[in-house]
Length: 388
Ligand code: HEM
Image (cartoon, rainbow, N blue to C red):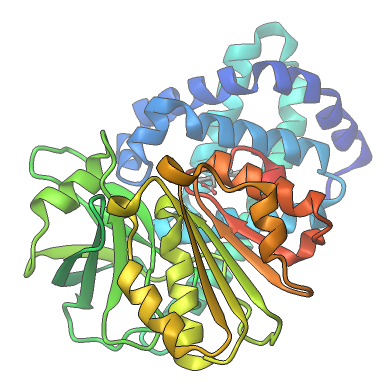
């Protein structure tokens, strides 16, 4: 446990971290990769270029500083980050490396204001915080390895089908190369895909939601082609049937609660449909009388993925409804739209771009939906502790 004195010192540095947090983490990443270029095989280079990961780490440190004497507050956020760490293969021996370069960066950026006392307190706090991550991740590694069909690290898969779901989204059906059985996963989870285009020095990793229900002899991801998306373009343009691709075991805690009988409202924007499609298929196959409202918002019909599949399943489900809104002709999803679909005691699962998520979540809260009924995931690094 941390001493009261250490906690007080950490708390007193919160204003400095607020002001300089991003400078420190930017400096830290440069320093880390100068000394350990091999870690570029793990980190998302696009997130680095956009400064998004810097912000995520800065915010986490800031939050950790605030809650350092109530570590239980950190647990839900740690769990989500640890799922991502586990799916990327972050190991316990990486933590001291990160800690060393982080503290050195604090000293270098803060200069004289980084007293020995402050650096000492942060060293102690980093040790405690990183141990929480290491323990949670250790449990996750044991779980993913221990369950039937589970595995550790990355395994080779073969692309067995490639299906265009819309003008922008293509599905890839992936079967394990070594003929192993696949583990059961919870609908809503994602996998990390690892690719290394020939011209690249380092591997690139990206998380993609599994878009079909568990229990098949394949895993399916559905990838949106992004304008400058390195991995999405590689997959769309160069990855073909018969090609090999590496995957880590399913991860993530944005999952459908299959123990509950409550009505479900699935709300997706654009490619955010992918994890919700997995949840929807899960209910269609395993609990087809559950009350489900599937709401999807996207630009227009050309980019509306899984349209036929969703309609076919809805028709076969006695208590399911589908509502689609095309932005170009009908505008964005409004509070009035939400009012029309709120079902008493329902659980809401939401996934989509940031602005969509903000509008939907605040709309639901204003309409009186309890926060614990609202479950969400957005893509990209979480930008603050409040969001994880
Ligand atoms: C992602 C915090 C240690 C590698 C993240 C995220 C946060 C975070 C907040 C974003 C999560 C999200 O996307 O939802 C921390 C904290 C650490 C720590 C507080 C120490 C206590 C490490 C270590 C490594 C690592 C030791 C490995 C060397 C990564 C990677 C990502 C990530 C690769 C994915 C984002 C990307 O690729 O840019 N971490 N982390 N982290 N972390 Fe950590």
